[in-house]
Image 1 (cartoon, helix red, strand yellow):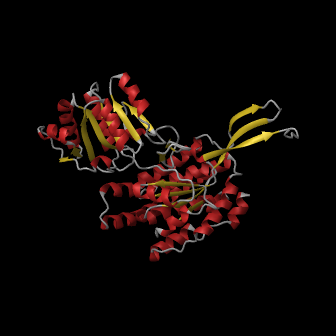
Image 2 (cartoon, helix red, strand yellow):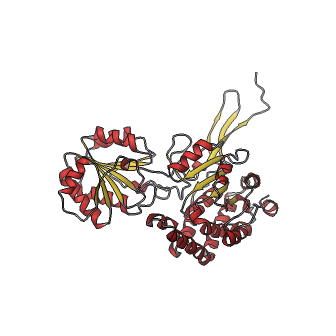
Image 3 (cartoon, one colour):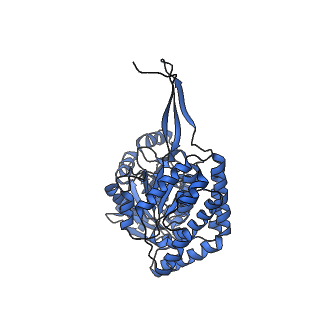
Length: 449
């Protein structure tokens, strides 16, 4: 069935065609209804694939990424040059960049998904009813996913491979800044799918950056089963307001660490440094530290010294600013503005606030957090327990960096997004979160009385 569909179901233009058109005039005619129809038909083919067939396709994608690495990097270099000319920040340019190491890492990450258990077809439960009916629940694909994301071309591979492993078709729409890179990646994906007889319509990309096409995707409920926006508040707001399709929100984090009065100073500063500096341009990087007032005078100058060494600018509330201005450090220290504690910085900037106690820390997080990744640094287990019980973020950390809120770090493989909502999925959305289930009822010609 997959081979037959591969011959008959194709998106409006192949990846190569889209790349050529995008390079020549930057505009591609996109028929969203045709894309939706092709995705729906492809999803029916994907649902029949065995785990072995899907793993074969994933290995083919890994090999094509390696083979296409020079072309991918060349396309990415053009995107980077445009980004610099347009004044993109260093954080955004880092998100956009695909060097040889990153392309090869994408291939290896694809192979890691091969080793993950395939959730499709697994039985969640089974029981025999008193009337003799055998009832069970079985995992099945969601169907067709629509994923909207910004300047991170690696997301194209993460989503495509997770969707394939779970037998879901997907329509992708990345940021304008990454168009050439994403089309080059798509060309490698389509080359792989063609080689193993899977329809290329299983993984499609909206190759025109016209924002009206996003609105069309959000209303394609006849063909698309779930929308996943990965980006900032504006994208989430657009999806929630305009979509006629269920939306899983995620990918935006205003992340906090509360430093309790009992915390180990040196080890806490190591965690703060990692959470802020290791990769500041991602959603699980640290945005604000809250420091207990009893340790602020001793702890904050040490934080400022370390952050100054790493080029981090501090945005301090009035109480912390008073302490920090008296300390000698190389850190840039500014008074926090009224909106600074509601910022996802995605840069080397860190909010700092002194709080009276755990109550105030919890209240601040509950007010300002996007419920992505929040944590406590403490040696008081009762405070840790209370923090975990009262903070309802998708991942809550005790004495650990917020950077661990990640599908790979949690052992889920790659992720489609980190969901911050409460229905269907929370936290890193790996393979199981891309499935739903159906009830199966086996009878012996039973009739209901």
